[in-house]
Amino acid sequence: MTPTASIPGESNNVAVAGRWLAGWWRIVHLAALLLALALSPSSYARDNRRLLARHVYLGTAPALLWFTVLTTLISLVLIRIVVVTAISYGLSQYALEMVVRVLVLELIPLTAALFAALRCTIPNAVEIAAHRAERGWGAWTHSGIDPLRREVLPRVAAGVFCALMLAAASCVVTLFVAYLSVYGATLSGFAAYTHTVGQVFNPAVSLVFGLKILFLGITVALMPIASVLEAAPRARERTSAELRGLVRMFLVILLIEVASLVGNYY
Image 1 (spheres, rainbow, N blue to C red):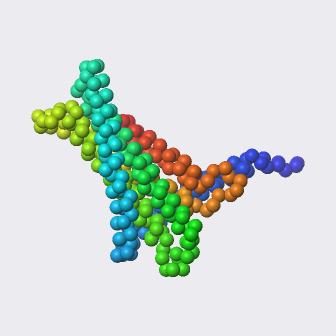
Image 2 (tube, one colour):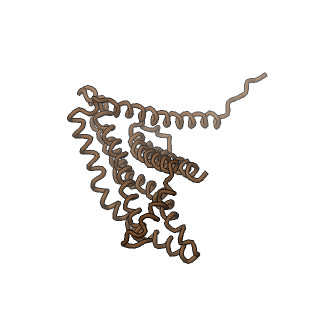
Image 3 (cartoon, rainbow, N blue to C red):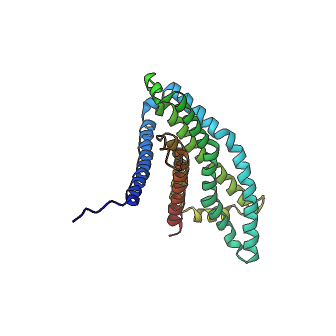
């Protein structure tokens, strides 16, 4: 019997699947290394603390005001649309709950994460790629400096903090704007308002909401930087490491959104 010849397409598919799995493994490995460094007291020496504080401030402070103002304006428009529509259908008692579920639970965390990626984490990834191209990790190591501790960890932490802070500030402002839109500048509706918000944010939903914001922040902070730390792609590959990193980031964001919807409504 003659041996069966291997099919070129099958071997190519196996190679592509192997590179895909290897890329995800490198991301998981990098996340584990950064978590270990974040839990290490030596990562918070004086110089490292200053560098971490600098990246956190530069990554969050310039974007916080503009993002809060932008989300406030958009929230005003959406809240008005929802309230007027609910009143026209005789469902005014559900307007506030719908606003909280649509805006606070779903749209604002996702928008904050994407804004943090555009404003903070992707520029940080570009900086790391430039430092790596100029000096290389070997030069850092020979100088007695751990590049992951010195360059990568502060930028990832800044990205996570930026996403969390943008989401927290925008959710608080949106809840305040929702109260004013529904009840006006009076305290008479405060008891009913807190009752409705408390019904939405039950313990299960609050847990899912907190985990969603946390994992979205980790995703947008880690994925762009992990992509630029990958080895240079082969010449025959049609996509760069940066583009593959963005695709992975949006895929993980989609999975987080689906998981949060399942956790909240099923």
